[in-house]
Length: 247
Image (cartoon, rainbow, N blue to C red; front, side, top):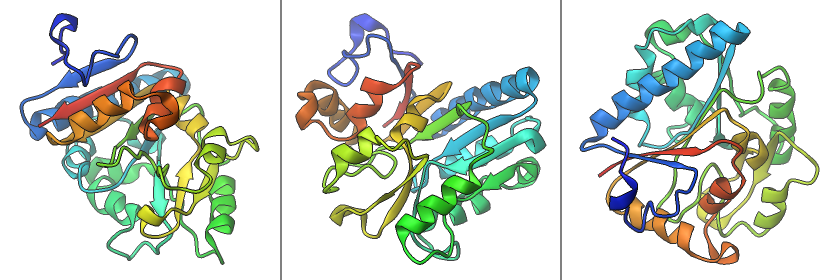
């Protein structure tokens, strides 16, 4: 349900052009977001002959992936990729590729084309360059991009403690995929550029849990220079950010 403007709290009062949708349960959120994504993808297929979807990893989207995999979409015309990835092989339990393969690319959705970010490169920078080459024919702008947000306010693999975070966000070289090294990341990461994410036709932020709401509120209220990385998405997105939240 979309929260009326006159009842908005500190988590939502800054949504001048963005959208806040909240649901009583994570299951209801997953169903609603899956339907929204399906409509956008199928609409893109009918309009352009193909569609593109970038999804995030972690524990939050598992229920969403199960719902989305069952949607009636012309899946063979859909290209799926990742918003970000850990620099670990696909068999690793922390791999986002493993999660998407096992939870989303099942049933009807198994016929979608999947473009991973990881490759067996010598280092994360080489892997980012290889991923960019692999994604060269990805339909852009993305028709749908689904982000998550950590309890520290990071999104994709833009971490607040990355030493070169400003350079990553600016991305003056115009790279499609960036390497990220940050102490809180746990291991080197690969991420789609902020510019690629923010150009998506449908940009959704999927967050669950009572603790995430004040994190987002703080990110939207703090001065930009002090705000966590999620703030950059709201500042730079071309289309409204649709926030889907459940406690």
